[in-house]
Image (cartoon, rainbow over all chains, first blue to last red; front, top):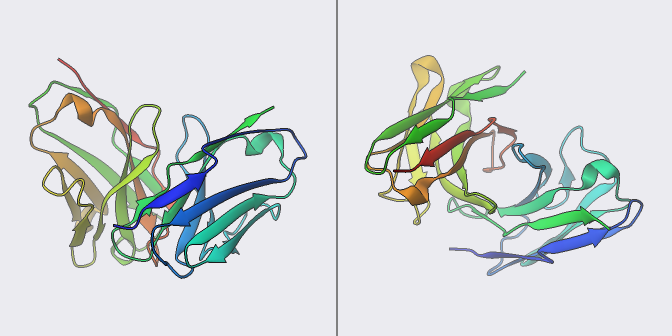
Length: 107
Length: 118
């Protein structure tokens, strides 16, 4: 199975900060990576797919980059509604896997 | 509007069986993969398996193979996740999610909370 390691697992930041979350794959997955946001008590929401394509309706302050084994999710200016947990997911094989998650909290 | 509506919360005893459902609407049910994702209390997301209702092609995570059964009834646009013998460790929120392609989960159900306790 392809393992995904997210870092950091916890992040404390202020409104307006630039935030970067990393997702590393145990083997190359080309650009077959998606990012999701989950707020407490809610289902996850797709933010980015194909490593860097923004899902329709997602604010442009979110961006994704990377290929192969290293990927990043960047929030250019953190907003109050962005405090949530973020997960990466690899789509390279039908044995889909999620990263462990990164919780973004208010400093 | 695409919607996935899951069945309600369940409270079961260890050893009991259970089947939860996920009804799709607003799209061609047979053209999207439906996946199931577990989230144990306070933990992350775990992919369990996925089914293509068009031909019932089903794939499981090795961690869940043999532990659950995924099925779908395309005549009523509904996917299912079932257990034959629940354990306390099956206590979790279970989400269904639809993928229009490349196994990206575009749409999610609201979740079904399963509690297994004696």
